[in-house]
Length: 371
Length: 166
Image 1 (cartoon, each protein chain N blue to C red):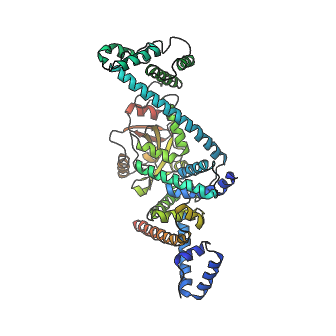
Image 2: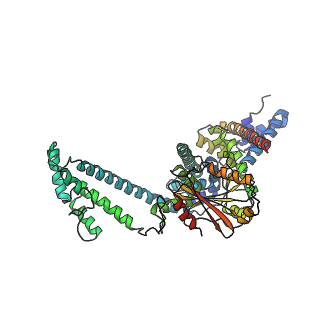
Image 3: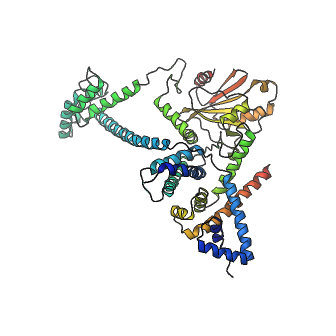
């Protein structure tokens, strides 16, 4: 008697057999002890595998369908935006290339402030006189090269839109001189939008502005929409790298990422954060009697700040053993570079230690913002 | 005409579950699931559910390639489906470790076995799995049997190692 194939047994259990096949198999199993036993084994295996997978099931709340519709329309707009950005970048590349060329003196007066017509004339002349390098007064070209220099092409009055329309009307093709000037105006316009000055005390490289930069807003959105992936992206950037720092025990690190609620319960109050910076993760340490909590926040460009916090009562009551403190310090140093700055403050009965790969003064400004 | 809202309601949880086990990041899985639906809306496929899964499989594959390129080394283990007391760190830790074992066990399967197993677990039937993977319908049962056995063996081995470490 031929026994039933294991694949057929699983297909039977999965309800994937046709009616005739199913009946045939059931008849066979009733008459064959080996196949009946194999079926029991297959059933147990199937249930066990299903149980294992259920242990890793994700939370299954279903957001409203409207989110998908919004997303689709956002994607369409995003596509147009991307095209504009590509166009802008291409224009900029042409402008920079030609201005560089002109600065070399290859094209006489090309980037000068004489306007599109002059530029066109000069272009034509340069094309005619291929070897006319000597005719290009280098100083003139380089002096006129900065696009911000006043001249007919940038206009002496009127609003920028009018100037742009005028430029578009007179020069349908982007000439080198007006391309550079136009780019510069765009940059100026964009720079003028978030025109809030940095408060006193903010130092490079972390410039703490009153309003977030457009890039910071993008990052915050990115963190809000997919925090884990954004954190991973950020960790790839220059500056302080997280390595396994907020990872699980599986990677050999001590910090375990937890929810904000768990961190709050662990610490005994809501963990302190630097205002206006996206939180990447809350962490606790396995078997930590001092019940420390670590908050990791992003400063952008892959630079992170971490805030280790614990109740002062625990520290002063001697619950934190010296050896454990030393071990904790080693744990911190394992993923922070030696040059990382440290700033400690006490706040409402808690000690907060901020660490980041920043100048000490920049870190101090950031940590003081917690107060 | 496809009622995408209805497909979404019925299919989204399965899709997230499937994607979660491909990218191991709940937020990213939800993000990819919505992206898959957003991309599917302009189409009129014969089998909408299967179509969405096809898009999702490709998105997950792109995601994996991208992660490989960046050599992503950061794993954020976040809370998930099991009802875990959010104020109990021990429970949360245990759940994180269990999920990590499932992930490691799945990693020991071949890509094809893993895909078939996860597609089945996400609720696709044999015919739909065959469409997704290019396997013959008749081979799905055998593939599933092998995938289930390897998953159980790998998981048990990891659990034994974990228990031995204490």
